[in-house]
Length: 397
Image (cartoon, rainbow, N blue to C red):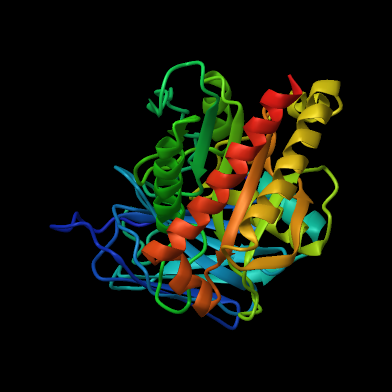
């Protein structure tokens, strides 16, 4: 995790309303942030693996306008209730903040980025805090301070509601990916958020499964809220789930990429696309730059346990079954079943898959996934596969 690398503070009197981030622009390795009012102050710190720079803006609210370039691959923003806004810069290569200053009017912040090698980035992340004073020089001594960044505590989760019959029925937990401050993929065509698509599909799947009368169903989230990745499968385990399905909608640089894919757990990715997906999805635990879901070594060691191996085999079998049932109903990728080291699938004793229902970067997939008929087709695919999965299990007994 990163530690405080650079601290910038500037106080100019409290505005009547919280100023918003008006624009974030990157040009020539310089980050220019404009606000629609005077902000209270700012601080930045480095976050490693993958390399990022986080910027906290006191007394401000997050905006939407951002343009990445050069050392910055992407710009993300999130509100931190009661504390201000956080801007997260995903880096194309290791870089540090070489200097920073507010504009004279207090409505702009300029950061100069300096590329470094991996060792220098790691060293800078561990370095003691540096500080800057007000650009006007007023209260310079009072404005110098160091700040530690506490990780927000995890809140105890209330178990979701289970619908669909008595306890003799197997329990399926459907996980709508992303949520809350984490929108997931964003469609370049119409701005559709992955978190909204996944929730709508999860609800449609629940309704389809309950209508069969053969299984019980619960959703990890039935509203727009954030869940740490590990908490998603832990909720399912606490409820004694017999199957866990995490719903997602991918994005790709190639906008012709389309169709559904199922992923199961493996420490060795089946291909480069699976490795890329794991790198992207596993970042969902980064709450505005701070990792809320760091695991102990127990998670890694348990993967070699026999129970985990049996679970992985059962997951793979269900993924192949889903591919068979989905193919007549929805577009699927040529290689439907893939493997990746996805945190959300690491339950040791519960068959689990991550179902990428399509690509929000593809215009046809966006139309399909946001339509009632498209969601119904995805839900039918899952419902058919789940019915057959549990029928096979019952027959095997």
